Length: 331
Ligand code: ACO
Image (cartoon, helix red, strand yellow):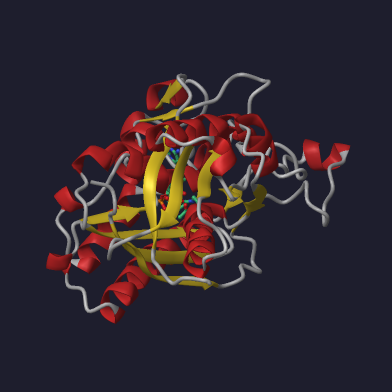
């Protein structure tokens, strides 16, 4: 019989490459400076996966293995693996399939989910719906991106923003009131290409010209994206709080996508939360796209108490944005 228990996070894992790219390193590469990057974005350094033979799946594998170890279960207990990413190892097969094989999740089916910076949130609610329906018992949600693989390190307007990294969480049915309570997701198709990778897809397959024209890198209209993200993340956070009758005092933690400290501050202000209740690690990792939110959960897990009210919020390319209200379920 399908059940309707909430889905809760029962373990968290992560992976960050060792190699650090600091703002001072970037000063040697493009016309920028540490002060500009810190004041405009909040970023001080980011991690870069330098090994030529390693990519998104590698980071996802490491994060997944850590989550399974934390929970103390074998990979063959996993029913589904969903990997939020815009930098899959290949266009196909999905990085989730590579992860499935490498960790030995022999009973799981696996797929990638493409929603840019909202990839982790959209994956989390997709997995939560599977748990709530009773169709799956254990779902592994991974957010992983090797952003350095699609960055033009001669373009100062984009290369300073991103880093590589991955996080993973395990979802299972909750026996109590903890778990994912509600979510709001939105999309507004960006037909003006304000944030995209022009080539490599079916519209502009790779050619010598697309490579020469640097069309395989992230391109964005930073100011437009900044405005949309600031409004979108704040609005959706308010939306989920209002419909769950939550005031700022009820929220223990805001877990925002880490794109720009100014976007995060604007969201926290709008919601009315002091900075001590806002997870912020952008200074260490930059924007790891699907990795940011699970990496926050990983970094803060020791400070989280069972029953804490968390608002997870994101905005990203697509445009895709959303928020999740969850009650933390780990003791
Ligand atoms: N170093 C020094 N100067 C720079 C740099 C740099 N790295 N990059 C741009 N500038 C210059 C510009 O050329 C411009 O100079 P000008 O006034 O002479 O023309 C000046 O700085 C101001 O540029 P703006 O683009 O207006 O700067 P802004 O304050 O908007 O900051 C930024 C730019 C950081 C990109 C910001 O717009 C932003 O964060 N946008 C959101 C983009 C984003 O997060 N994308 C990620 C994916 S989406 C998501 O995750 C939400």
